[in-house]
Structures are given as structure tokens and as C-alpha cells.
Amino acid sequence: MLTVNIHQAKTHLSRFVEQAAAGEEIIIAKAGKPLAKLVPLQSTACSRVLGMFKGQLNVPDNFDDALSEDDLKLFAASEIGPTSDNY
Image (cartoon, rainbow, N blue to C red; front, side, top):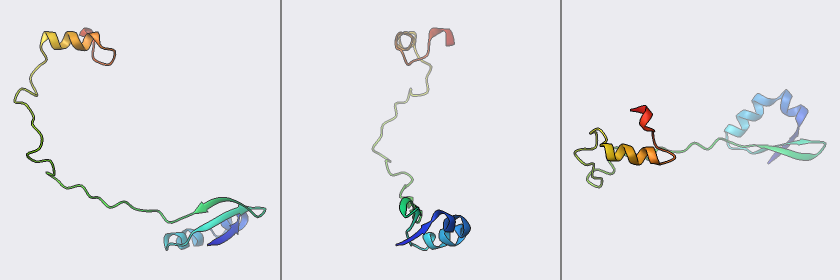
């Protein structure tokens, strides 16, 4: 692990970024005291699969229907739902 002072880090930042991208960890210090660490960015692999819940979820046929008056009253009575002024 390479340790450099702040002046070196400012002067040669692009070089140190390239080294970090290649896998090296670089410590940036001030007066010999470590302050920060320059490390390679870890990319996360996308593991999403389209249709992975197919057949496991049930959406009712009336999902997109307008809310009934009773449902609107429930929302209006709650602190997080819409008010009847919005309808």
C-alpha cells in the first residue's frame, strides 16, 4: 500500500487514480498522519432477471379501477393518504 502526502497527491492525482483503478490502494497523509484512502471503485454486477417473479404474484383484475367512496374515506382519515379535496 502506497502512502503519499497531500502535495504529491495534488501534483500526481491522475497517476494515483490510474494506480487505484488498477487495484492498488493509496493512503493520502498530511504531516505523516493518514487522512484518506484512494481505492478502486467496486462495480456491482447487475443480477436482475426479467420475469423472475412470473407466476408468483397475483394482481387482481380490478387493480386499475377507480377507488370507491369507502376507500377514499379511509385515505382521507389517514395521515399519509390523499385528502378528499384532491378528488
